[in-house]
Length: 164
Image (cartoon, rainbow, N blue to C red; front, side, top):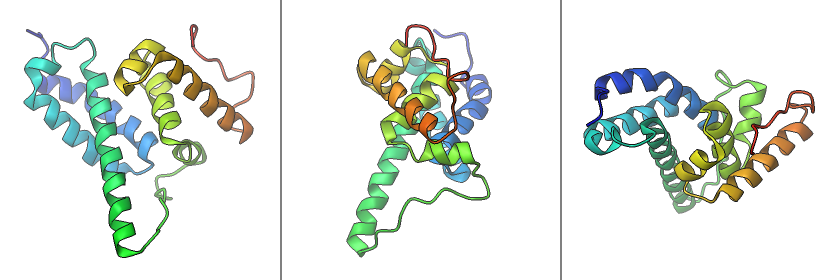
């Protein structure tokens, strides 16, 4: 049994989870909604989630999956209505780096958030993203190169974690 109380877990993780999801989605309100749903699911399954090596990683992966499901659902709805409205980052919340991260392909964006914002190792990121370690390494490298080409990273500030 995990000694951490689910209420304490939710209180401790909520801020980091919302911040990671803001980077991932580009939308603070959506990030708060996704975090709330993911933490509610963690609470409901606390006997299982609390016993995991990384309950926070589980919560992030759950929230990310919820975001992907929501985007797919909206995409289907737009196609059904004949509208192809593009994904728009909230300009009031956005800053240049957030916009750049939001413009990355989904896997690259998820990998950057998992590796550099949540601080997961390559192995932990692979586990929580449901892919191979090589995929995490490749997506991280591709994302960093894209940000570098846009001028957000220079070679003196881009220090990938050892073993990446």
